[in-house]
Image (cartoon, rainbow over all chains, first blue to last red; front, side, top):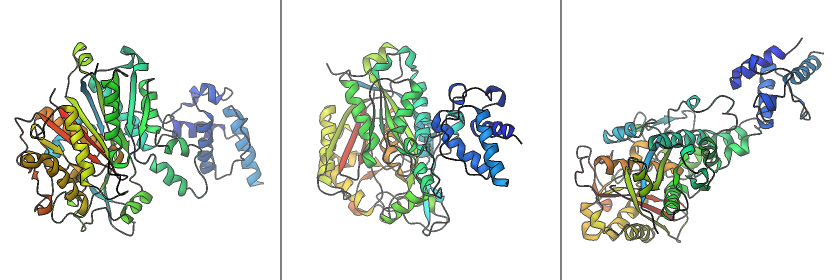
Length: 80
Length: 402
């Protein structure tokens, strides 16, 4: 189960960024124009979309692929 | 040397739309933008909201953390710059300033924080801060000179325009983007204003005519939202680049009542009126139109009339007066700017917007009110716009034909 596709769709819906424009392995801050504050706000959209609660501490996440991994982990923990 | 201050651009995003001329025509026709809002509130509420497509100015990503109060400001300021035919690339960005009025800041951001069930957007503070609109205008236009916010309640953007005019007059900036924005039509703010007992009451179906300045049956104002900006530059500079000059900002008067936080004071208002006349070198009889503060509160309209009567004396009847708040609502921090814009257009087109909804004038407010069918003012040479704030600060702007 990977959340990557859904996250790409969510970013497109919320910020109008095409999936092809944001390399999952590139820095979202540097290449996507999503600064840390916009990212923090994006976490709300993720929580709403997946019905999960994201952990607070992960300020180190920089790429969409890393974010997708974390979302996968939280979703797996929820269903377990 | 003192420069003459020219108005060379107008921009608006308000209840009557995003074009100065559309707004002015709607006012001339007496069309009210006030309508019922928030039917779930315990007491009926009415306001004038702006139909605004923010996607014309922002991508979805850019909208993150940008409150409506800043969105409206960016749009109105951008249109004012275009109207003036100005781009920052042709000017020295360090010699351009933003002078913006804002009474409250991002009300919607704060309301969302209260109502978020503990989950608060990390962008609430930068969205809410009252200087955010000025900062967003500066970022959008590339302005690197003074970028300042004036928060003086209902006189915020009038005071901002006066301060901008000083900077242009003294040659501190070449171009000033001056005006203001306000967007506080959210339930939490509306109920607070209802509690203040200054909002107009109305029967179901009669919201549009609820605000009746200077009328015997007046009961207060309705809130409005929007933004308006004027471009100010020296008359020499405007002439040199062949810019259209809508009007000259010839005088401004700032005074304080120093008596009471919310009760208006005729002597304080009269001091601001006299200061504006003195600076412009004009006599009361030279001024043919007053866009009144006219909030339609029981006490406010009488006090304003008394201040005008004190300064105009025997010439009071020659001064034609209207309060356009009856139609666009009280835009608080943006009120001074939109009313200055209306005053400039009245002067430029020599047409006066009517004082709407006044079937019977209160004898205590006896003024020469503009009636709906008498908008022509063929010999108009100068006009004033009054803004009198909670806190006791009074600001009067005096415009002359260019």
